[in-house]
Image (cartoon, rainbow, N blue to C red; front, side, top):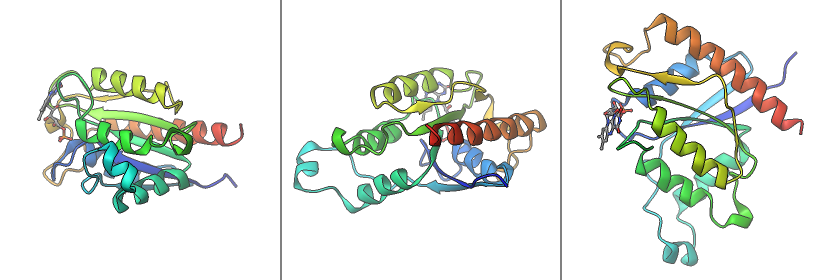
Length: 187
Ligand SMILES: Cc1cc2nc3c(=O)[nH]c(=O)nc-3n(C[C@H](O)[C@H](O)[C@H](O)COP(=O)(O)O)c2cc1C
């Protein structure tokens, strides 16, 4: 029997009908048997302020950091905003990275994917995220990659992923994340 792993899924979009959040919802459906996926919303994470950090971490940030610490890996889906990942996600990573001596991001395995409205598939957004992850000493899965283009054409009116090639590819991606997480756990 293979081991169970817990994945914390984070969307870089707060939009109610977000395709990136919908991709995470699809991952919950398509996940391998022994993978548990919890989606954590960033909607209650305040803007980072070092003065606030010194006074004490906000409750929502404490919960976020604790959920990262207790997860075996992270699954991130972010839109591309102005050739980068979203400020919402960057802000959350900034909080989670503090203080550096107690960062749950350190060595944390993660995989990133994304949906764009147009043809880019969030390539530049993902590359920027990898740079930030590098500073935080996170363990990024390099391959396979998921770049979902033309979001509107890949989801139905209920925001369910309906594009067969993307569904197949997402299954492979999640299996690879399962293996990558176990490999990192055994190190
Ligand atoms: C502020 C802003 C900046 C954007 N910049 C880009 C961009 O640089 N590249 C791109 O492909 N799409 C860009 N888009 C379009 C997003 O890809 C599209 O809105 C996408 O559906 C957002 O993801 P969501 O559905 O998860 O909210 C931008 C959208 C917004 C609101």
